[in-house]
Length: 329
Ligand code: UT7
Image (cartoon, rainbow, N blue to C red; front, side, top):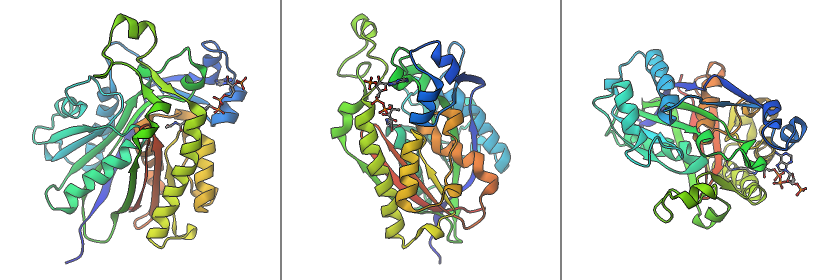
């Protein structure tokens, strides 16, 4: 019997309507379109406006459209892995909240926190449940309402983040398509460069933490850039070498969208030519867990069955990794 792989059988994404342009950011912080475009590649990002709306509200439209596309009901889902750094609440898991909102009564679920690499960690985790035969339908969601932890007084970070979510359905495949290999890494020594100072158990929320702006993402951009630019490129090249793939074998490179310069470095290191590199950073900025599923969603119609895709990410933690998958439809 041929090996069972976990294949993506449907993908969908959602971004909120409000467009925060570089021009509008010029009115909020001391910045300009030329600086943002040349340093990051970002022109605009989407923001979820409205009281009482959270990351699950970004995921609901993406998942509902995905289910419709695949022709299945929410009750057929066995497991929901919600990859996010901005959960609706500290607890319970946003996966539970999403399950309730979409009416998935038969699914269990959990949240996965690996910052910008979360979606890749979730894809690798979800794949195990398919490969083992334990589950037939696993939903992996990646989404963040980054505007909820973005300090719009810090011009070096507020320009990069945006809100958005995407989801994929994993199902068993015996034709050799699906997730073939992954290399995933974590290094907690990187915590100092990218983290949220307060709101966790070591520093619960207080008037002082709010006054000190400690509930926002804190980033030492240059340091993160240096680690990201080498590690994301190296790990993508590593997964290709491990699977005897050269640049011509790759149909699409799907990089995390944090900075156009990091994407270009990854493309150069892997030798994948520019027309095969998926980039939407100019429209959405860095949606953290949302970037890769949003790319898959927007390029879905261009993918062909059997296409080799290399997914790569780097994020807070530090966390980084790359996944090799063969598109299944
Ligand atoms: O998603 C997961 C992980 N995150 C990343 O991968 C992000 C990695 N880091 C980056 O993408 C970049 O470091 C940033 C885009 C965040 C910042 O770009 P940079 O080229 O590293 O800028 P910098 O922080 O080193 O600042 C360079 C200069 C500074 O001015 P001086 O000190 O040289 O006079 C900043 O004050 O640019 C200034 N600057 C800005 N100027 C205009 C910083 N932000 C801005 C801004 N507009 N928005």
